[in-house]
Length: 116
Image (cartoon, rainbow, N blue to C red; front, side):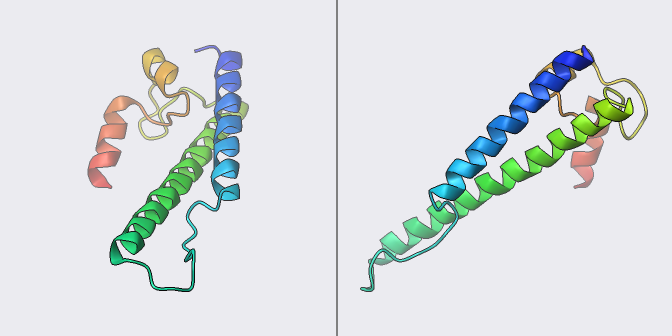
């Protein structure tokens, strides 16, 4: 993958992640608050907790992906982009096209996920 194209794609991803996270946070995502001072039906409380958990997970996932994108940009800067951080072999073009933030080749990624 051309480094300039990779950088543009990663910077676009970073911008989109930041915008999505800002939108979620501005809408109060992940915050749990009662709408009134009266007890609500237990089903309402369960729905609110479920929504809060889902929103918190979305914010955390965006944060994790943002970290991966920033790390990929750093690898472009230091000249190690496209090289697996575990085995040192080149990451396939096809993988980088789909996941430009990928730090590992497919084989090493499978091993890392198996140990997680």
